[in-house]
Structures are given as C-alpha cells and as structure tokens.
Length: 111
Image (cartoon, helix red, strand yellow):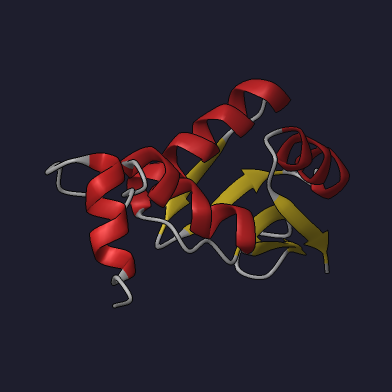
C-alpha cells in the first residue's frame, strides 16, 4: 500500500501545521517600486518660464512618494514637492535626479 506524501510529511514534521511563508510588509511595499520604471521629464509649461524636473510612474502610496521626494530634495539641495503620485524638483536636474534614484535602487529613464 502506497503512502500519501502528506502522511510522509507529517511523519517528518510531527503535528506542526505548515504555513506558507508570508512576505513582510516592508517587502510588499518595496516589490512594486523595484519593478516599476520611473519617467523623468523636464517641463516649462505653466511655470512662468522656469524649468521643473518631474518624476512620474510611481506604483506606491503617496506617503512613500513623499519620502522619496524628501530624500531627493536633501540629496540635491533643491526645492520640490510630491503631489498626486508625482515628484516635482525645481530646475533642470534630470541627470542628477536619475543618478540619485539609481542610487536608491529605483529604475528610471529620462524622457
């Protein structure tokens, strides 16, 4: 008589229930960020002729976007904001923003 693999597993582990491993909340919040590619755009429209660098394409919540924006502002020493899932950095800083995002482990491209 053949034994079921469940019986063999119970014999090895005893009566302990085996639960599938659940990813931690931190890993869940990082996974979408790693897969997403962020777009870096420079724009002048509606800003009185001044250039702004905009980062779009985030798939995380607004609080995480605000954290990333704060890190960028500190790293670049410039002003900016995070609204509506986008980050606005003052000035034409697309190359600097791309480098900083890469240092944070985020994929990006300049459009």
